[in-house]
Amino acid sequence: MPAQPDRFTDVQTSGEFGELRRAHRSFAFPLTVAFVAWYLLYVLLSNYAGEFMDTTVVGNINVALVFGLAQFLTTFLIAWWYSRHAAANIDPKAEALKARMEAAE
Image 1 (tube, one colour):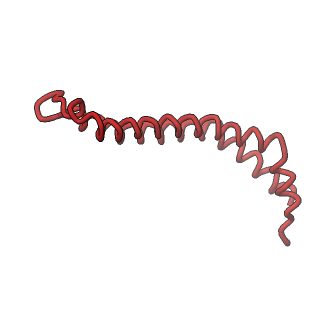
Image 2 (tube, rainbow, N blue to C red):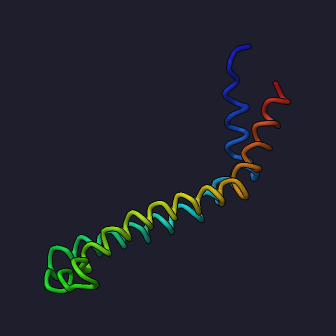
């Protein structure tokens, strides 16, 4: 069966698809901005606040190392949080759209 671009355009302009996009954007955009700000803070502190970043926390561990490791932790936490959000709020809506389109074939 040949592709039917009108069907895809209809779905794209539907309220259901709009809800799907809002569910994704309302989560992904704020977290992306927050993470980039957090990362830039780390970079700026590393460049311009060397004494602060060199402050010893415990033993040979300084603030720079703690911030660096926190970057990794933050990345994994955001990925885990997004996975839960997608499973609860995005995937069901996407599956409903997919089922509707497949039923119309």
